[in-house]
Image 1 (cartoon, chains in turn green, orange):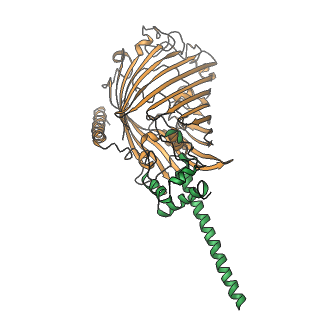
Image 2 (tube, rainbow over the protein chains, first blue to last red; image 1 turned 90 degrees about the vertical axis):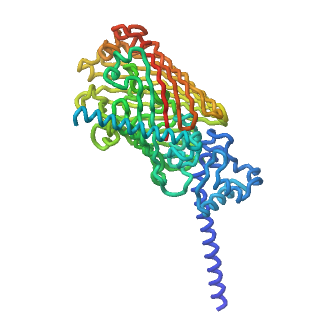
Length: 114
Length: 455
């Protein structure tokens, strides 16, 4: 009986972990899709601020690979910039989960969590 | 419909357009300077017009990428744009050239000899349709001919992916003019002059890729843009006179009829650094065209090979660009020779253009202008370029060259006021008495004043 309980608990925990990892993976994927569609044009595929459209703008798009960017901006501030726009950058009309996904992706792909 | 009814209808159209333009113009002047309201691209992206254009219609790197991306970049994450991306434009102009009133069509019969109010008025569907598909479709009213027709049309689907760790845009386009799909302003459809008089005299000779097939053909093409470095594209066109492409020529008489498919190609290299961008490319096509207005029998064959280059600097206050193209066309005129309308089995034309643009972004708007040189030369052919009053050539040469000086002022992002002067040094083969009836090249020098509104 004890072995059955351990097995069931183990399976539940394992499935929970797997689904959490899968959810994180999905969120990462959603963030990447959103980043590629909304940000990459100016900030670049590598997040270095050298996207194909970067030459159009003054000031230049932010470099997310620069540690200084992550020192000066927390998630709340990044979300506010995305929501309200900044300089030539437009204000994006994104849902809260999309906003979270995009910031998580930026953070993992280019920034502090890299 | 009687002539009286036609004239009445035309007058009503003009009055309606004038009233609409006046209302919209007033609205523009009274409205805030918030450029995000219209046109539709600005509304969709939430960005100012200057994101896509240095001075419209010249594209910035953002504008080029936006177009390659199928006009789909949006501030919203929805599947489609709401409200639908409609926009408008109107041109009001004045043209002055020596002798226009007495001898050059359509001035002889036109009551609006010099003022074209409006010269044209356009309605656009311009923006994302759904997901990765977008369109730039122009329905235009021509104030001179009093006709409505589908003008520039470019419908795209684009997919963003990566190759070798670098960004790759893959796309398909359906459009109705060779070079319309291009994103640099060094190619014919998108090149300088961005606007010109509809009624001023123009040289007789021009290459096929240089506007001859505009709205005469429709095509399906594919393109790829990799690493912000290499652009390659190819499109197959067919006539708009009949078949599946007919809607792409709606409202336009198909007077240049191509046989079979017309392959068009484009290859360009681009480099961008800081505020600068430079591109170098080639484009061209091969077209078999029925001589005259025919659509059967033998055809003439035209092979156009072109080179182009563009340099662009976008500073905080200063904007500078140079655009240039060279087009060489080999003409196999067997069909025209047999009909007695060409003196040789083969001819050629070479066109060269270069323009320098400078603008200053002041607190009162953008101010600047363009200096341009143009030249077309080719083989003498006394039947193709026969003597005729005003529009012909006494010596049978197609050679024309000259300069265009243009001053522009944009008090608002969506209002362009231009004063353009075209100076001909040579027209249809000669500097003086080019037509054999005493008309000199300089008699075609044209002063053109334009007010261009985007709505």
